[in-house]
Amino acid sequence: MTKTDLTLGSLFDGSGGFPLGGMICGIKPIWASEIEPFPIRVTTKRIPQMKHYGDISKLSGAKLPPVDIITFGSPCQDMSIAGKRAGLGGSRSNLFYEALRLIDEMMI
Image (tube, rainbow, N blue to C red; front, side, top):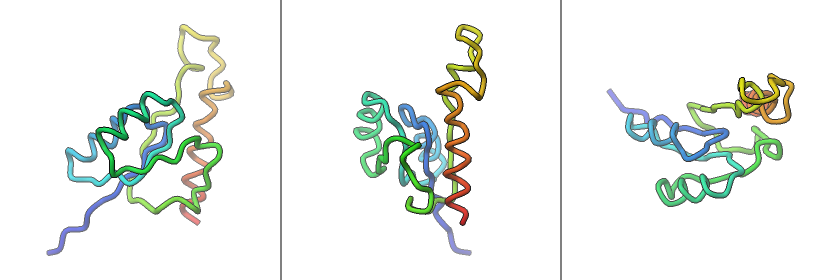
């Protein structure tokens, strides 16, 4: 029996919670998409082998390295009871649709 290493790509990566969890389970994080400078610095230091690609709205799934697992925690500010409750149509939470687009492009 041969072992196949699973790989992971992380959208809206934040400070790398999904890649860290993956590493604990033996999954290799390959790339991440995040726009906030501080979380990118955190993951660059803690997971230096993971490549950062930046803004999801500027990425093409067809051009990203293929991975076995794609994780994302969509920005939820527009869904919060403390916010304007714009839902998935809000300027931040609608990035959920960017994740779906990117995944669809990767499957082509």
